[in-house]
Image (cartoon, rainbow, N blue to C red):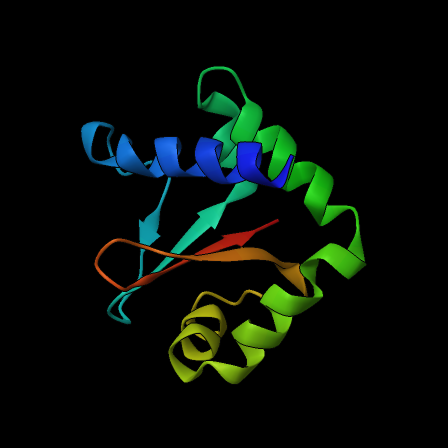
Length: 105
């Protein structure tokens, strides 16, 4: 299932350039994008939304991402500017350009 989630998210990110930026809200901090997982319910078949929603319900599955959000200065400051608590972080991915994509509930 881990591979299926990764492939689904990779496909969603690959097509993100073809869709208006409704999915990711670029912030003032370079290379950090915030994606609200509830916006992924419009991704066609809903697989990314389902995977991240399920992950969000299990604190043991989000601990690593939340720890990274707290320890990475750019991510932490972006979350603070957007008034998002680090406990709402579900997953963090690295984009092709090296930036971070932070999925929050």
